[in-house]
Image 1 (cartoon, one colour):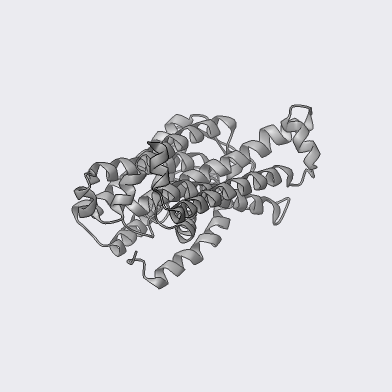
Image 2 (image 1 turned 90 degrees about the vertical axis):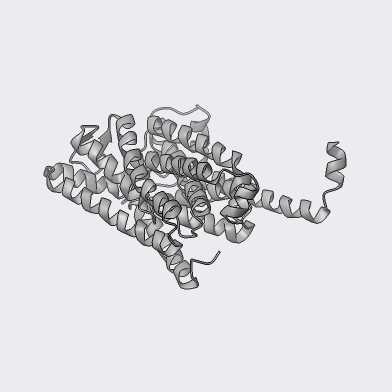
Length: 357
């Protein structure tokens, strides 16, 4: 039966899908190559041979510390966070039918950051230091993640209420996201006003967005939740394709639109909350990655979801590598690099009229 079905598929369609699979595989290869370069790049001046020997367990002392404790977790955290933020943006754009939707533009990142700040300053989930190397150490990642998730879900519920109950336009949803982001930013400022000098300096440093603060423990939590969310999104890829035709079309095809929208936004918010709680605010990855891949591969979520996730990992890894090397040995905040990259795209989409799909 399978052979008969395959014979009935037009050759042009097979080439069409093979091209998309090839592009995704190429992105994975580029990410791996950039990861190898990122492990090698830096002020320590390691050679590729030293990196390879260390990864194979044939090096000791200084090399093990640099690669296994600093470089490798940083590279993997950048890829994991990029995958999570990008796939969250991809799904949000579909569920809200808004090409400008992303964790950052809808204020979800700011809400998560406020929740994490409450946990670190008010609930004692983080210890503060005066050194720039480790201004905040999260000693209770579960409490910080839960607090960040509460802040993210508060924003998400407001956006869902406006989109589903009130039926507001995409323009209004973007404005609502700006307003919510400002609200949570103001709340964070008020929280800082009542904090000590060291706590204020520490939380400001934390909100910059820094991949280097991720430990192996943090990476395990981020990777587990991101992978679980990615599997859920892929399992609902056909539902997302149906939603592209409109809610009425999706309902006519048997899609439970309300449940898909609620659970999808829940999963996307959870991934965002976990990433922000460990790494701080990293803007525009959830906007840039999906749009780049939609331009290349189209809107079929069978390919768009994995392609957006890989592109997000590649973009954040490239941004972090640039932040570490452009003015080495000074390490710039990766959030600033991603904002420089994403703001022009945001303005470009606005100029083209983002209400059109």
